[in-house]
Image (cartoon, rainbow, N blue to C red; front, top):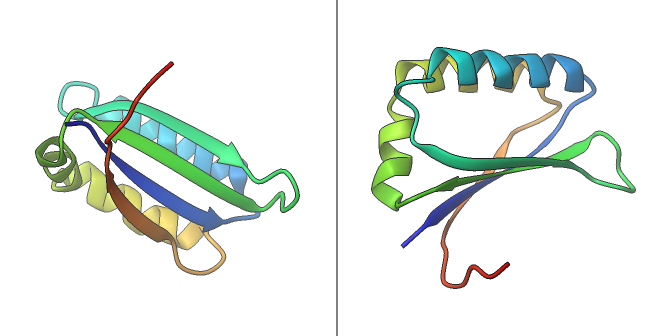
Length: 97
């Protein structure tokens, strides 16, 4: 069963967040377990964002979370955000295109 992590955050430094995400992707090219990621900006609150990160399984998400690069990413991301990052974990029960 697929699994998604949803992160919600506020930032005025979107360009730096994008650079940080790209850097993490480069550093983890051969080790990350992310299947797909989508980042969206709130239409009416332009400093509010949501990242939806999909994995093949909960176990893959846990492996990804334990990467040292992910720890460094989270520490840097926290510095770029206005307030805490909210995390939510979901088991996917339906996925249709």
